[in-house]
Image (cartoon, rainbow, N blue to C red):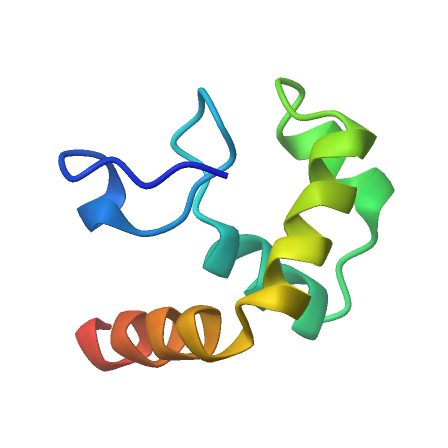
Length: 74
């Protein structure tokens, strides 16, 4: 995962993409299967999804905060 100030507000993203980890977390919470994510975002691979899950587990507070902040913006 990367944090780049000028990309997605500096929130954690899959490396070399603009896919925020909190977005994947939201998809998984909504019941989206990995197969559907990989079909919708063909530049992602299964190992990146695994890495995102691990990042979510080890940075739970950060990802939950990012998700809340995004929901507040909507």
